[in-house]
Amino acid sequence: MTPAFDPAVLVLEDGSRFDGFAFGARGTVFGELVFATGMTGYQETLTDPSYAGQIVMMTAPHIGNTGMNDADMESRRIWVSGFIVRDPSRIVSNFRSERSLTDDLVADNIVGISSLDTRAVTRHIRDKGAMRSGIFSGVDFDLDDKKQLERVRSAPDMAGQNLSDRVSTEEAYVVPASVERVGSVAILDLGVKKSTVAYIAERGFDAHVLPQSVTSDEVLALGVDALFFSNGPGDPAASGAHVELLRNVLRSGMPFFGICFGNQLLGRALGFGTYKLPFGHRGINQPVLDKRSGRVEITSQNHGFAVDAPLDEVVESPEGFGRVEVSHYSLNDQVVEGLRCLDIPAFSVQYHPEAAAGPHDSMYLFDQFRDMVLASRGGVSK
Image (cartoon, rainbow, N blue to C red; front, side, top):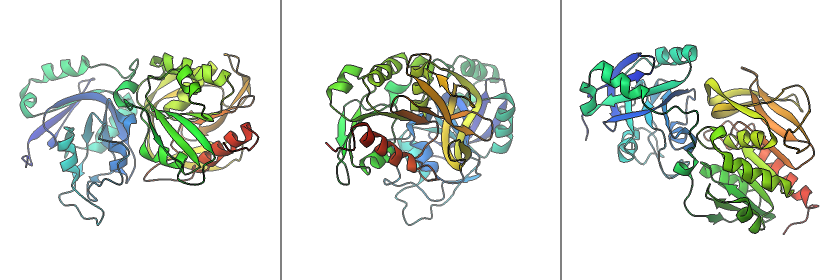
């Protein structure tokens, strides 16, 4: 058992410092500091591969009370670079719990910090923007302030990083349709979550989960009915190979659906730019407007980059894929939250319709994907 009250410090690249106590593994870790606003779902956040390279701070003050279990794992491990909470639960009290949050943080060597003013840190990031940071505990806690800051500032920026190879599967695998089979879908694993694969299988598709290194020729040779791009970490501007893969598949006429990182890559494939948000959208309470229906959806989000496309007009794809419109946008800051192609069978959303632990307002998108695939081949199963 690790000591309960080892000192630790969070250091931001602008020189700000926040003292606390070590939580989880001891050591030093660097990453982009971001905050997540969910009141629940910390296990799903920790095991979401999209958070690779980031130090995640929970704005909800009390974390860990329901423990951890195998059923709610979104991937094979915890992916955050570091973890920040205000008040870690001293006990675990839930009938589904199999172990404590601390147990899993130590097992995956995740350095954390607790007992600091997370509200003050959140307000600082909202004012100054997401930035590089470091958590120091153990032997490096005793480094002088200047040396700690130098190490933080020498860490890589999130902009320009391609992190897909860090989180993607190394070998292709297939998850069979879990209801009556209607076809098959190739899923490019850029950091896919377990629930995404399950929801596609529940729509009657055999899910062929592929490494991020596959080529468009390999995808087309599978003979699948559609292509899906998953969520994932990193800068979409650093994923040129995935953009070219998608362009080649779109030219073949194969239907496409993308979420989160997949939305950004569709945007780039169509010829639009992407840009980095000041502090991103992370949490399970983000309001989004569906322009076609006028319906407001409460969504789960985790993205620091966004597509640069006009909100209120149909435009021609700069890359020659016909007409494109923004289908959804954020009601908080008018960021693009979805794209719909009008001349080819392709659409995407920036948020997470597969969200666990919710909300589930956007689950209909998987049904929409199924309908699009069936319509593209005249409704005939194969």
